Every structure is written in structure tokens, then in C-alpha cells.
Image (cartoon, rainbow, N blue to C red; front, side):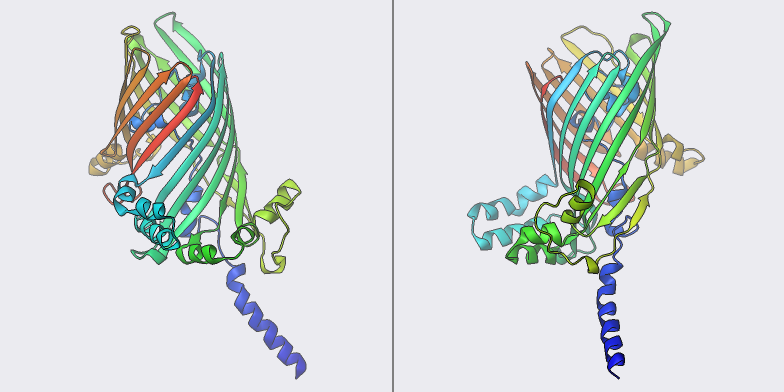
Length: 417
């Protein structure tokens, strides 16, 4: 009889903790779908041009867009480069959130948080992205180190309580090599380039609106974050290759195959402390978690490669004014086989149009069109100081017009632009 009671109690405990053990933190769970996206560092210049820029050279990060841009790139050095991108800035300014936070009271903080959550729309989205990077090119060699913080969102309904926030941090080290083949010296040439990248991605389990409230009321939120918030982390080693056909009068035809071998090998950890103990060999604080309530798993995030193509026109009009017009088509392989209206729709959705003009080697003005959404951008250079800004719209829904989200991106860097 006693053994039966013990067995019943043990079974009851197992039933209660089973949901915890069975949580799916992979992108198979709709909440974490955005975590499967390939890593792409934020380029304010490209965003201001509607996402076009495959054949635009002369910038420190050009080879990260197309490896072929490394050929004859010369010496460029950017350190540091800091980019901050805020999503839904218009809605945030109109919500009154900032005014509530400025009050500094507990009630104001709660009200401000509620107003902020109200700006997040249903289904997928982004909240805030911060990029730090340093890049150097020497001749036809390129190296880059990037760190990106990305706060993503997933909302199941219209009410505030259905909001989930997912924090992700990605580091990437990129090495590239390019070279030029002269077909007709001074008139026609081919640039070839390849980059290899080591990417390490980590994201925390989703924080729901109720969890945010509990965390604010927690006596020791740092301990909860370090010991009771699951972390999912892993790596990928993608390779990209590109080619530019340089023609007279400043025309360039480009193609870039990106993200070969881009699958991620991921592991779930009970907490940031557990990750530190297993990966770094040391924890960040005293470990107070109960390891018996968590089962670590390993899974793979599949990430397909894609082929982009573009046409760029950058006529040489002297040093006073330097115009550039770019047309890119992303993932051209997915268009093949389509006909009629489906082909027109796919071509429209996957085409990026952009133009920029540089004046007096000091100012850049940029405009673009991406899925019908306009973007604008500007840049200012003063000696070694460079500032870039872009205002753009990204579509997060399955079709154009379903869920457009506007964003404002600012970048500050030193040395090479």
C-alpha cells in the first residue's frame, strides 16, 4: 500500500513537470520561427536604398553584401561601427509611452510598459536591433567581426497578454578574398570573391507579458534571469560567393550565392549560468537552478542558400557628384517555374530598387523601393566621423500589405565609411 502511494505521488510529480521538460525551443515552435533566419548584419546604407546594393562598392562593408566587391577594394578600416534600429517609431511616439516613463513613478513605469506593448502588432515583428562591428579590408582581403542584439516579438492576439519577446544575440567573424580578371584592360573585367563565416547564435526562451510583470515584482530578477531562463545556442559555418561583371560607362552585373552550409547546430541550456559552465567553464553567479527539472536537447536549424542578382550603374561624373542606381532581385531561384500573375507577383515582391547620390564627398542622399514600400536615407562624413540614417518599412506578413512595420536606423562609425 505504501509503495502504491509513493508510485502515485511520483507519477503526479512527473505529470506536473512534463510540460516543462517537453517545451520546444526550436523554430518548429511558431514563437521561435524568426530565430531560424540567417544572420545578416544591419547595413543602414542598403536599407536607405530599399535593400539594393549588390554591386555597390567603395564602402567598408560592401564585401559583406557581395564577396566580389572585395576585388581591388584597397584599404578600409571601420572601428567602431555602432548601429541602432528602432521599430514602429511612429507608433511609439504617438502612444505616450515616453511621457509615462519620464514621470519616474512606479505607476508611470507600468503604464509606459503597457503602452509600449500596445505598439506591438499581432504575429511576428521586431522591436529593437543593435549592431556593433569592426571591419578591415586590405587589397583584396577582408575581415569583419560583428555582434548583433535583436529583440523579436510574436503576438498571438490583439490583447497585451498575448505578447512574447525573444532576445537574441549573434556574433559573426567573416574572412573574405577577392580578385579581378581583366578581359579588356580599362574597359571590361570580372571580379570574383568568396567569404567564410563563423556564426554563433544564442536566444533566450520567450518572455511573455505576464512573465515581464512577474520579473518586475521579483525580489531578485537577476537571479531569475541567470538561473531560471532557458538559453538556446549554437553555431553555423556559412560560405558565400559572388561575381561582378564590370562593363563600360559604370555598369556592373552582379550575382551572389549566399549561405552555403548555413545550417545551425543548436543546444538548449537550462540557463545562462549553465551555458557558461558548459561552454566557458565558469558560471556568472552561484547556480541556484534545479538541474533535475530540465533536459538538454540538441537540434538543427535548417537554413537554405539563395542566389541574388543585380544591376548597378555608377557613372563617373567627377568628384563633385557621384550617383548610383541599383536594381537587385533576391532569391532568383524561387522565381523559376512560375508563370503569369504568379511570376509578376514574385518578381515584384523580390525586386529591390535603390538610388543614391554623393555630393562634395561629404553628403549622401538615398531613396529606395522594397515591395512597394519607400525608404529614404542620408549620410554625412566629416573627416573620420561618419553618420548614416535610414527610415524604411519591412513587410512581416505573408503578402504585401498584411503587416508592414516602419523602422528608423542610425549608424555611427569612425575612419572608413
